[in-house]
Image 1: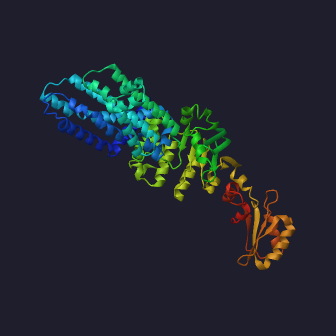
Image 2: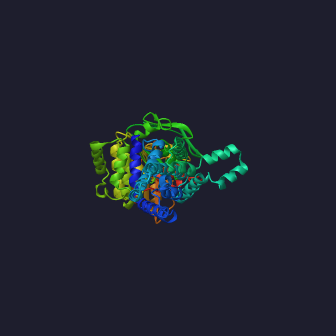
Image 3: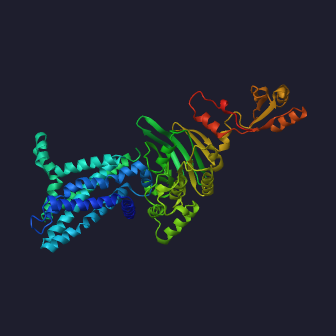
Length: 244
Length: 323
């Protein structure tokens, strides 16, 4: 477990060694605020709530999380440092988890920097802070699931652009799988049980339950098992493809 | 300390490494020679646990590289081909990361880092990002990374590639210095490096061992190894040939065609020993004018070419070493 922490620390420092971290944080803060105020109509609704803020998170994460995660393994393969990392006395699982945790912690920091939003609604009125806290937790979990998917896609290629596009595409499919448009297509070719299964994988529906203030164990289990599954897949892919 | 037993790696139909069986003991510095694509890097990657063997097994200090890989990796220092490094990090941050991964903490870590920085002379560039360093410094950071935990086994893939002659000398001194207490494998293209650093040389070609021995024993494979090379003016050539016939069998004497007014003879070694004294004595007794006279050692380059060149090339055409 110590090696997980050492790898996570190195990785986190690496984010801030390049402009990636700063660009991400600025874009995330600016766009999430702009969407909340202009598209979401924060003031027009005259409600002390942050649901307009959290509504846009799945769509923001769809692009921003693959941008954060695309380098996780693709860069290691491109520069050859994967040979250095995997010949150190650490397991691949520890390396996969350490890298994931670093990127996740970074996203958590970006989310924490949206605290002025929360302060604003508290000054303007009396929001339900329990719902807001639940929404933050849900948002972070969803970001983790997106990130785990991106990590897996990043392990497939040495090209970060390819990793980004694959990551964004798979994230999009999981986000949209609850939407009628997708379900119609699935219904046409698959039995009802499968349609339900696909629908239940939707990030959107799990996330929207949480942002309503209902922290259902099933939603938490869903996101956590998503993270575990994709990280496990990442480990297998890294082991199988590291020398190629 | 390093054992390979039938070690093989297949990439699809290509047999990159084909049944290597080899053991390297403490105190040995093994030079791994072979043309590009012979399987040197693939072998080293398997030993380092980066690639899984397709067949056979390998062990570092008794720990199987596939099934007990963490224990094996702990005892191994590895410099990958091209010395890949985290370019965004400074030298100090990178080496500190490696020290932590290798289990050094607190004061012990600082002390070990200071030692290794001193050993490879990195003091001037510690706070610079690795990307901004020259190739020589980068290679030294790679070496520092491999040697940091003072491992009993070192595997270095082309450690002197891209260094200038002074840096090469420094790295060779380093390897030679460590060689007594460790088992070391060094891959290289530079054959003089094998003679100056390695206690043993293994030539591999097409994934198999083509030769295994000391640099000297490899040289002995050359037909002209330890032959006496005699150069006389063309006018004295026939007289010299008479003398040579007295000191050696006719089969042992080679006479090359005259060039630039000089004729070169080779008198091949008899049972490994150069017949220098006999030749010199004969020439002196007959007062034959000599342009140059010496013993041909041959060059490892020629052995290498003979062992690894495609069909048709022979060492005979390459015996023009200096005497």
